[in-house]
Image (tube, rainbow, N blue to C red):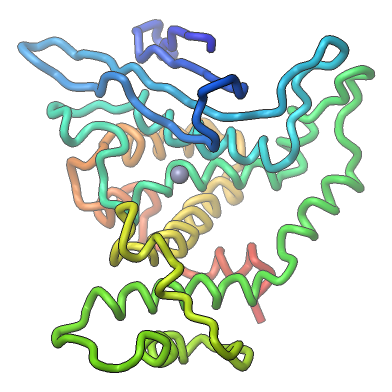
Length: 287
Ligand SMILES: [Zn+2]
């Protein structure tokens, strides 16, 4: 694990960032961002946060450096987005710092970062061959972008159906007397594309809807995609490296934590409420 001191453009101290990339004995699998200390202000002092990104990336060997898969690259960008949310926090109360926001808003700073990995301009800058230093070929970038939309229509309605089933269970007002399978069939019916497989039952196998903090919040995954696609659209308009747009994102979203209603923060960044169009466009679903 490596620790970095992170400074703002004016030289002021922002955060300690711990990057823990590789697997080792006893380490939990997966990838996540966490904070050892949140940002807060007390007696005129701005106490800066200690943020950590933990992953289990492909390890370097004696002959090769760590060669990340595309999935590992997007994972890094995702967790780094959460880390920025933590590191750039500028609030008074610890309980509202960084990622302490509503669940359906917390994945905006992380998911928006993944958009850069679909941009030729960014990939050609970052993805260099480890021996020759050559930038990633345009044909490969095109393949990455094309493959990104494989079965995106099906994936979209599938996510929607999970969200609807989750919300159906969490909005019952009377005890449910119907069979579980029948209940979910009705809940997911509006998004059903294919005949259901006899004997299958999603609800009883779906940890997210009763466990792990997503209860009545599973829709947040899809909603965050609407937000991240619409927010990234402003970067596409102004340039993916445009500092003024980035600064606006930092000021209105990354620094504000949970101090204001998410929609208020979003509108102050974007100038209007999120539109579904950029997500449809990105997923190749626009008619
Ligand atoms: Zn996340």
